[in-house]
Length: 203
Image (cartoon, rainbow, N blue to C red; front, side, top):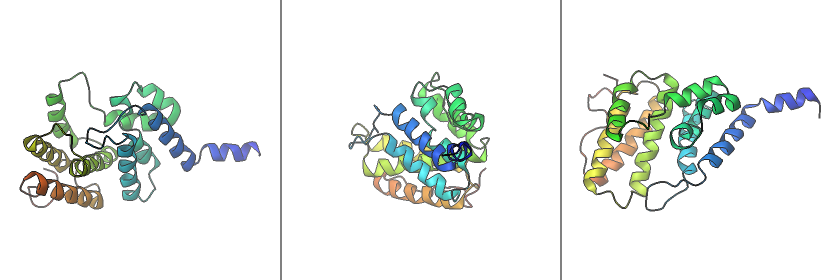
């Protein structure tokens, strides 16, 4: 195999994606989702990534890599420097942009997600929408056993408020979220549309 061929393979989108999938799977290997089924956490990451890939027609590798890696800084011991060394500064910056500061109380982090969502980059919002879509789907299919109806309703309402600030980046992703919101609302008794202002645009 020639050195030029090896170099081309090393830089290919498929190789980069599979490196990121492998990296995420190893970093999250001991983590499970909170639902009754206790699915491997990687299932969430691949679902989010598939949605981002479809929304971008596979044409934005940075967004796709950011999607599969989006929880590595927040939920594992991964550092931005480690991501930058492996996947480049652009990917590392994107993952950092969608990372909550775990030093803050949970309530404050949730408030900040709503307040900061509209200021995020297009790529960050392209990850945020499917992230919340995946979470609502999980709530429908396998909600945490300890969550009562009120807590489920609270999460559905909060997710909608975050995504309201992320709209006008991908109508298809927004439709996927709205469908998940509709289904989650029907089982939690949470009324109202996912975009309460009517036109689906950020306010």
